[in-house]
Length: 112
Image 1 (cartoon, rainbow, N blue to C red):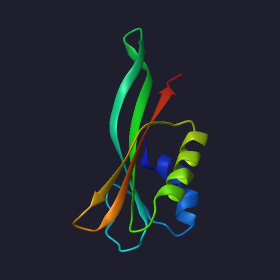
Image 2 (image 1 turned 90 degrees about the vertical axis):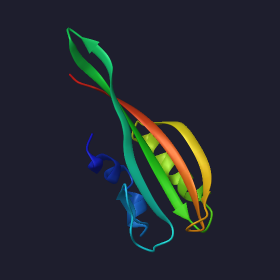
Image 3 (image 1 turned 90 degrees about the horizontal axis):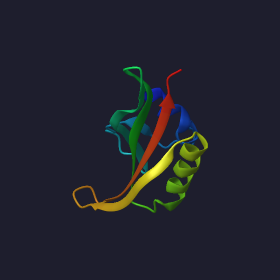
């Protein structure tokens, strides 16, 4: 799955001047969002070929403020695009003093 899919889904976040980057962000804007695909696997097979693939993506929110509003927006955009949440967790990054919200989603795509 191309990273442009997630970029398109999260375009409203980017439009509000919050950086959304694949894997790494090197700026200083607060908050910012990163994402990465961490798993991709065959979901269904027929006649020795994969007919459906499941993609797993992790979206990370980093901020000194609260994560709730941005978390709710991301949940809304991702679920509207057909992804479903599989995991969420809050962390604190002591080296950067940032709150870190992890949200994982999955999406199954059929190959016709």
